[in-house]
Image 1 (cartoon, rainbow, N blue to C red):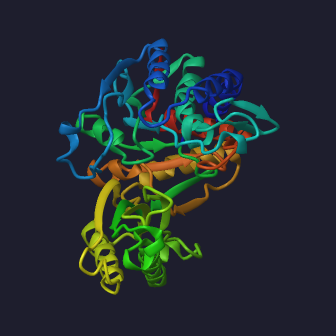
Image 2 (cartoon, rainbow, N blue to C red):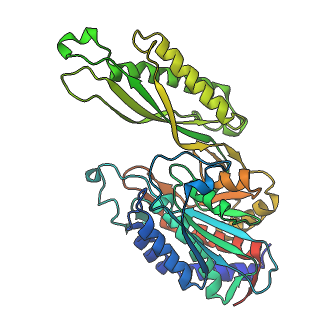
Amino acid sequence: MLDQKLAADIIAAVAAGFDRQLEETMALTRLPSLRGQEATAQDFMAGHYRDRGLSVDHWQINVADIEHLPGFSPVAVSYDNAFNVVGTHRPREKKGRSLIMNGHIDVVPTGPADLWTRPPFDSYITGDWLYGRGAGDMKAGLYGCLAAFDALDRLGLRPAAEVYLQSVVEEECTGNGALACLQRGYRAEAAIIPEPSGDSVMLGQLGVMWFQVKVRGRPTHVGHAGTGSNAIEAAFPIVAKLHELEERWNSEKHALWEGHKHPINFVVSRIEGGDWTSSVPAWCTFDMRISFYPGMELARVRRDVEETVRAAASGHPFLANNPPEIVYHGFQAEPYVVKNADAAMSCLEAAHRQVYGADLPKIFATATTDARFFGLYADTPALVYGPVSEDYHGFDERVSVSSLKNVTAGMAVFLADWCGVEKK
C-alpha cells in the first residue's frame, strides 16, 4: 500500500489541477468525434500528450493488419479517418509495474438535437454535472487518465515504470481501435479503463453481437396488396421470434448476473425498407444488437440466431422459399470476466479506500467495453473503473463532477502505487 502521506499529497494535487481538468474535458467534449470524425479530437489528445513530454504514436488503423486477429469485428465503413493515439512514458529506471490507461475518443450519434436542453456538443456545467455528448462515455475518464498523470507531475514525480496512455477509436461499434493497439505491440502488466462505472470496478461484461436481417418481399400496387408480399410486415414476426430467444437466454440465468432482472437484451436499433408509399415494399432491413453470457461461444450465438430467423421465415408463404439474409457487422465481442487480477485489484481497492474512505463496490455490466481485449487476448488484467454518469447514449448526457474528481484521485493513487514513483 502507498505511503499515507504521499497518497494524501496526490489527492491534493488532483484537487489543485481539477479546474484545468474540467476546462480541458469540456474542450474535448465540444469536439464532435462521431464515427469517422474523430481525427480532430485525436489531434487534441496527441497535443496534450506531447505537452507532457510523452512519446506520441499517432497512426491510421489498417484493417488488413488486424482482421486476422482474435477479437476482430467486421466493419462496413471506411477507416480513412480512423486514427489511434498513444502517449508513452518511460522511466529512467524501471522499479515498478507497467500500466495501460485506455479510453475511447469516439461517441455515439446525438439523435434529434431539439430533444437536448442545449446543443449536444455545447459542453457546460450545471451543479454537479458536466454535460455534453461523450462527456460521460467517456471523455471525462479519458482525459482523467492524463489528469492522474499530471497529479504526480505536480509533485515533481513520474511513474517508475512504463505507462501507455491510449486514446482509441471504434469502441462504440467494434473495439478494433483497442485491438490495433495490441497489434502494434503495446503490452503492460495491468490496464485501467475509466468507462462510466459509477465509482465501482467492473468485474465482468456480457458478450455483444451486431447483425442485420435483410428481408425480401414481392412488390405490387397496393390496390392489389394481397397478391404481393410485404417485406416490412414480414419482418415483425422475425423480430418477435428473436425476442423469444432473448427470453430463453435470460431464463438460463448466470450466477454473476443474478442481481440483474433482465441482463440479456435484444434491441432492434435501426430499420428501413420500402421505396414507395403506394407499393407493397419489396425489402426491409433491420439491425439488432444482442448480448449473451460467458460460456456462450460466438459460433453458438450465431447458430441460435440463424435457426430462429429460419424458423420464423419457414411459416411465411413467401419467405419460406426466399429466406432472409443475415449479415454480421460491428460487434462480435466475446464476454469477459476479470481473472488473475489479485494484485491489481488489491492495489485499486487500496487506492479507492484512501480517496473515498469506503470499500470499492464491484459490479457486472450488461454491456461490453474494450477491457475484453486486454483480458482475453493479452493476458493482462483489465479493470474498468470510472465515474458516475447518466444518460450516456441518451439525451443530456452528463458526468458527475465530484465523482470525476474522486475517480481521478483514485487512478492517480493507483498509478503511483502500481508503477512506483521516481523524481522528475
